[in-house]
Amino acid sequence: MSSAQEIVDKVDQLHLEREFVKISELLTEGHKQYPEDVEIMWRLARSYFDKNEEVTSKDEKKKLIEQALELTNKASVINPNHWAVHKWLAILISALGDHVSSKEKIANAFKIKDHAVKANELKPNDATTLHLLGRWCFSISSIGWVERTAASALFGTPPSSSFNEALTYFLEAYKCDPTNIRNALFTGDTYAALKDNAKAKEFYKIAAAIEPKSEFDKNLVKEAQNKAK
Image (tube, rainbow, N blue to C red; front, side):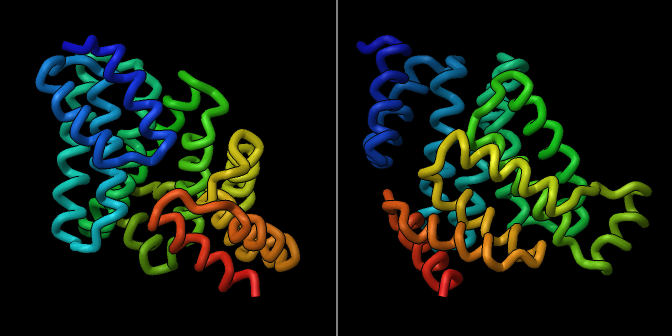
């Protein structure tokens, strides 16, 4: 029987190779052997999220996100100060936004920010966490007048941010990992929102030139190519 650390090491190597099926099989078996190992738990939650990005059924996506969230919540009870647990709670609560009401989505915005900030405090300069904070700022800045008015009525002080704040996080994430297609694409979108079309086109071209590692990445490259025209 492999040790928990041996499973984690193997999974990390497979993740670099984007071997999602093998990762899922290994972590599912590993979780049975070590049901309270946080390192296995958050990686298994990540594998559910990765699978969610590959499937098209909305019901299946929701089920995978809920499974991942349940697992990550359990991990947070075992270790409430693990940077990756907070990062994945933020990512998964954000992903759940496609499957809940507007009221719940707005309420969850506060939780997403709190978990992302905590993850960044526990492990600064993680590209994914910085990207996530940028996404949060971008999403909040994109809220329309109707949604913002509703948020004010429900929560008094709705979450607030700016496209400039989003850009700061996206550029920091780009410094940490210039191969992240999604981050380069969102950087372009943020420049576009700020009416800096030259810089937007520059980052769309950067995103379009990054080699895709999955079908999901291929779709992002196509989007970047179209926006770069």
